[in-house]
Image (tube, rainbow over all chains, first blue to last red):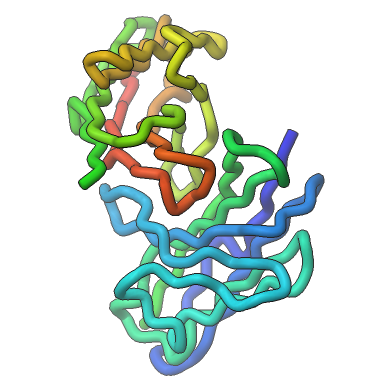
Length: 116
Length: 113
């Protein structure tokens, strides 16, 4: 099956610091990965599409300078929350799809970010 | 605007009982509908994926139905277990990109012993 690993699962950081979250496709190559944000009891909200070897595509209202995305290889995408503030505290989830597959999106296990 | 509405918002049942969760959508064009299970503090895990031509699909104790005419889907859970306690999310796709996914807000299911 398709496995997506996300790390760390939980992180607490101080305001003003940066945090990096990794998303890896373990048993398949993913030219595209996706980053979501989820607030308590709400739907997943797509933040950006991470494209291997090129710039990420951000959804409207998402600050590209605050949420830096790097997709350096076919199996790894990273999301860096820069100069974190308490309002950035949330649950961040990545997903990836096998190439040439229109159906299967596999989600990572998520990262709970708390900014204090 | 594409929308996916789920009901009920929350549901509490006793272990061993059956339950049915509902999903109504207004998504166009329609590509497929997916049900995911999301445990607290975890990412969603796929249960079923149905295309336009599929009326029902099962995955163990989970059975999803789709009525493309009325734009409704349901997820039936049989003989519930404590481990079924989770949020169940209905996601409708309008195409092959994740940007074309519309997420419901989920039904929070609690199974009590």
